[in-house]
Amino acid sequence: MHLDCKSIPKRIIVIHVNTTFDTEVDETGTVDEPLVSPGTLHGIWLNECMKHEVRIDEINQKIDNALKNVQPERLLKNKKRGKKKDYPIGTVAPISFAGMPMTFLLVALSRFDEDNNAHASSDDLSKSIRNVINFCDKFGQGVDVYLPLMGTGSSRMNLSDEDALLQMKAGVLANLSKIHQKFFIVVYEKNKDKVSIF
Image (cartoon, rainbow, N blue to C red; front, side, top):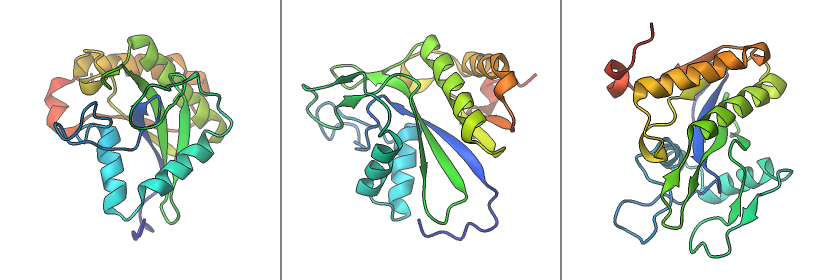
């Protein structure tokens, strides 16, 4: 990415993705069995990368490198589009770009069904948070971590924003002994009235 990032402090930004780490963003109604929705954080992140001249093949290469020592759970031979290696829930793939003071921590939260609809459970959310914390404990070097609100919207967990915040907070507190940096749970500006921080 070609940005002047000298004034931006180092940070880790968590992006929840599907278990195959797909990178094809599909507008609604453009293809059968769409992959990444442009309205999800996963899709927004991919589109922002492309706006900043990061090619999808470069992102795919970085994901492959990050996952080279991770054993996929299965190979989706019948999947028509996208990636076929299906990784365990909670798999973490750190991605960074030259010149940027941030690491994007992709975490596999949701699994696609045969129609490419994402699904996740409360256990999946807890495991994903725990794995993010474990990764940051080992490799985070005290850098601030930004966790987006997870478990609402396209993941089909059917959590309200308030319930998602409470579950994520509980997940962070349950692993407090491994936290050696600041963790921020980020709530979207448009949803700030749906949650209470007290």
